[in-house]
Image (cartoon, rainbow over all chains, first blue to last red; front, side, top):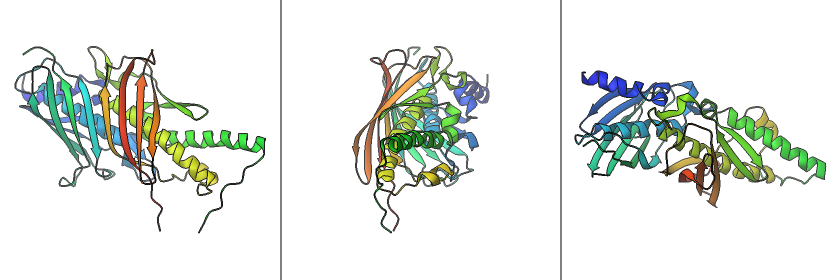
Length: 139
Length: 174
């Protein structure tokens, strides 16, 4: 199976990721890029149309897990241990939000991930997060 | 312009105000599309607010266990923290005469605390059933607030997630 199909199936297998309309762009060597299209149902402030921070968290959590799964050591599964999210600014209403996660260190039991989310202004992150993830067997 | 502190009414008026306050705050929460999308509901007893996340298929993050998506858990905790902090903040504004319930009921969205950072600990996987959360305001300052929030499912003593967040309080515009 080619990489594009593996990527598509990864998202399709997660009901919540599918429901958010997440699109997997890159999944290679511990780096994952996933985008989330703007959707009115994800709005957190009806007065401004800005996406809720929680939806951005869900995107970053999914992206981080994907980065762990595609690490060269090939873990069989992963779960979030903790995730610290910093919200820098509101995402521009109407913009797709894209998260890039890097699994920068991996032990037998724990994977460490950094993730950044941007809108169309790619130089100024909307949010960043760092997380620790479990590493389930299969090496 | 300096606002007048709210005058206390009769026993009946105070009780009626509290009922109306609850209805107004619930309307404010349900007007947020993302809160409605997740299906979060709120239950209030005195000053204690419990948020409820009814289980739905679309909230699943791991279909093999199955388990609630970690992002959903984070969002549920954050919504609970912001809602608890907002109620506290808006009630103070109501008491000081700065918040007009008529304008709130007409759909005017007041300025609310903004999340600066949010740290979630995942203690066990979220099972495919209803979840509950309550937040405690550790410190509510003029500019910053710190809130701790806990979530559980069947057994309150077995938390499945907890979080701490820092929030920027709305500032007066001069």
